[in-house]
Length: 573
Ligand SMILES: C=C(OP(=O)(O)O)C(=O)O
Ligand SMILES: [Mg+2]
Image (cartoon, rainbow, N blue to C red; front, side, top):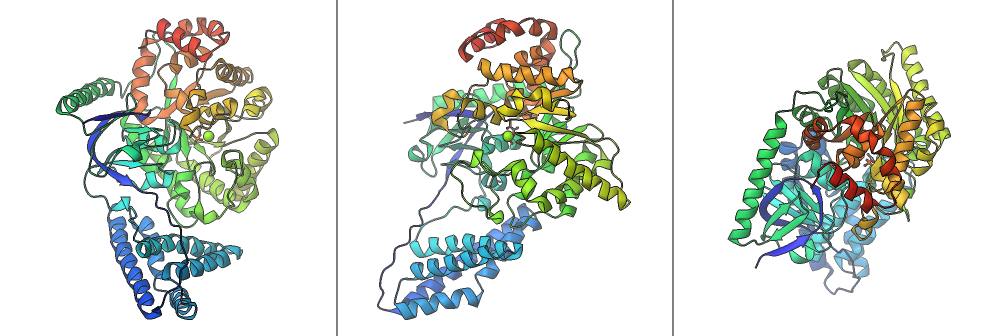
């Protein structure tokens, strides 16, 4: 019997393959007495051998598929598993206290993790992160729990998971992972954004995918309409194969616009840019004919590894992106860690409200060494293209001023050292906190540009978590409250002769595009895969006509009213 599950369409396209469940195991450890310590020690040693074998396999695979950098993490893990200073105390504990191996292992590793974490030393903190990771792997063997190793997948699959963290998503191998469905998450959660940049169809926020789908089930992911179909009948399968073909044809039509510039039917040019997470994404940006990069989310450079990237590594990454873009604008956002993007090796304390917590620019202004390293790398790379820098999560003018002052200090230092830096680098900010949007007129006097981050701006304005499917009905891009804020930001920028862009997902939304064009937005930055569709839509729109509806739309009272009006006026289904 085929089964239909409805979720949130997160990345377009249709994918059909077998399900691969990504488990989130329960590692609760119980303590119990044992009678034969020698046998228990042997059980422990066997678990270590198994964990090592697994790690060697993953390491070899990572080396082949992901490169030396990612594989190095697993070498560090293997070293931990050979360290007598860690293994001997576990065996001693089993012998002396006659306790089970998982208990002795858990106690010992927790003690080492706590000890290394408390040292004010980056190297020791990394060791703590390694031990924490390895501890889970060994525990899984002792407890007989299967853990998933997505990096080892070697056949076409659809990933089914409760959630995918951005670092899980970064490890997915696009050759085999054809799509994914998750229980939780929203259109703007970072796993969804990554799926779009990898061009993998995805449906998130299904609430029940993990409960309803077993390993090996045939699954269809309809990322166009937010549907997941499990074990389809042959009729249903045929229907989706046809839908996939139609979508591919549509894409081929849009592809013809790849070398055209984006001009509305009444002759206005708007800049259509793309968002990227890694230098590899530039291929997609060029293949989709984007006119620039409107958001480079640099935090992905810091993820999926066990230590901070060096200035040199960052410099190389930024340089490659700038060079490949050949003088087209590249807006790089400084580190925006926090919220759903974690860096385990920073060992920051858990927070009650991570989206409202110590993140992004707040963290950078405090951890200035890390921030300055990134700024130096950016400034050094600036001579290789058209770089613009912006700061994330700015709430107050003081934050912007402080961040800009640090940037200028680093620039001066470099110049003093005789290292070339581009003369003109625009310095802007993300507008994603309502306080900054409301005060945009003041900010506009000091910034070179705004980039409106609607993913966060909507969640903070509506007080509706962008990751939580239960409140996704409140996550309303078309709510007049949001539109008025966006309008205010654009007007404030223009009054000071500055430009305003948008790099939140709303910028690529078919219904939002006519509204934003009418509000005078200068730059639209979106997933690369949305660029050609947006260009095709933009060419049919008249800016003057779109602007004539501005007052009417801004004076509407509900999102529903706006949606109905836009659909009817611009003939959108
Ligand atoms: C573009 C944005 O940033 P991110 O999605 O990375 O939070 C945003 O908040 O709209
Ligand atoms: Mg944001």
